[in-house]
Amino acid sequence: MPGSGKSVIVEALVKRLKRQNVRVQVVSVDMLRRLMTPKPTYSETERDVVYAAIAFVAKLLTENHVNVVIDATGNRRRYRDNARKMIPEFIEAYVRCPLEICIERESKRGRSFMAPKYIYKRGLSGEAPTVPGLGVPYEEPLHPEVAVDSDRTSPEECAQKIQNALTKRVQNNYS
Image (tube, rainbow, N blue to C red; front, top):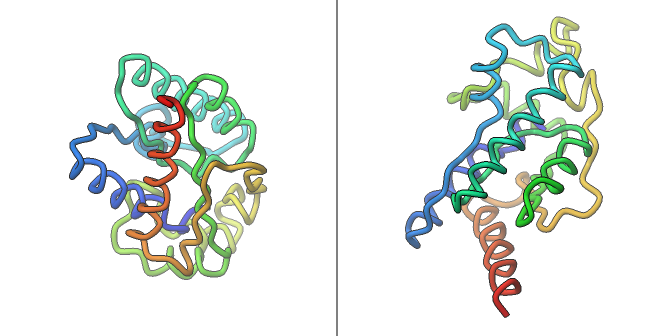
């Protein structure tokens, strides 16, 4: 969910991978959304289009042997399922965090990572009725390849656990 620590964990994961000379491209839903919908409404239809586009971009990159990390909330299972169908080596990393901690973090966030600011404050006031976990559902993953608890684990430890899952996937594919 917004404020769970996804972008900070992605940043730590990318640093870890680059230290091991693994080239990786981050595809951010917030960055893509700014390009596609400069004045976003966050409607279901708009989200469907944006999440289909992010999966397609990731698919194209992976087909060209680019390692991709998608930084996105993906509040609907169908968004993640679509990416899984399109990208053979897709790994779902679930960043778990209680809503109240997400709200607290987001209210104190310095860097926004291109995400809209004060999303929960605006959601709780009714100004932004489509905030995942408040106005629209956040559908938890049923079978993620890896799950991390960002409220109890540092971003670096979360990144390590995700990297371990990636390494395991690669080893299983080449054994």
